[in-house]
Image (cartoon, rainbow, N blue to C red; front, side, top):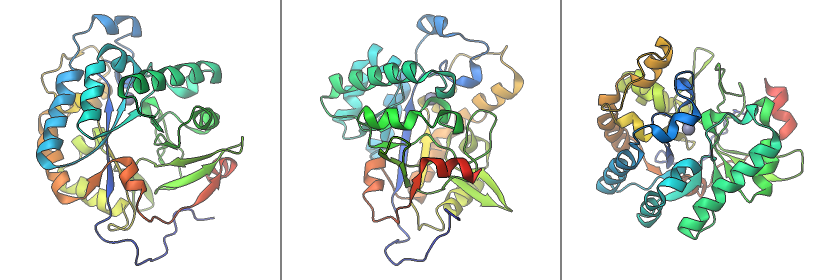
Length: 308
Ligand SMILES: [Zn+2]
């Protein structure tokens, strides 16, 4: 089965709307720095998430873009005003879990409890159902596909946690590269909007944003993102973190060099690159992007296992 085969279809215009997403977390929450900063220290760290997210909100307001903000429960509990601000500006609010721990390191019971908690906190603040989810570090992998049934049972209609790539911390290689629907082992349906990858010389190259967006020269990223979308025929998922536009953030100089490279490269260029990207492609919220008439593939959860 080739899940990435594309049939030419006149209903896919060149100007397809891609999904613009922000994972709302602070610079000290990232998995790449977890060896030098523990969860117990988080409350003592100077937080910069509110001002950095507000900068993104200002930028999107200026350029007329709507985005989906996956808010970490830990952040929402401390800064409910920020969640209200995002919602009141007309953006979509979705869940990034509560504790930013990797799903495949949790038990199903712990995952269910913390995911429900994050959803309840967000819904209490915005008084609107929260139906979208993204796992910390894209940690829905073959080891944690059980999470999909829990998400569906908690009332999530869609997920954006599966990266169709080989990576040390995440990924389901060879899984579909455009939005699709999964029928879970428990018989639930959940839509999946995977993180974007381009195919170059037989290899899957991440083209979804974040560190790759900062590390590649901008024209290279633009080429990869366009290639990922099959030249504008399929909607793609772009993501960024508020700390990625903040070169002034406190530095963890004792982190491993590769983690520092991933986290700190080109923080000072990221915001202007984002402005260029917003000019070069059409973007909206995940739900707006889903509303387009895309060719939908339904995969059984077990099919994902067999693709690898
Ligand atoms: Zn995250």
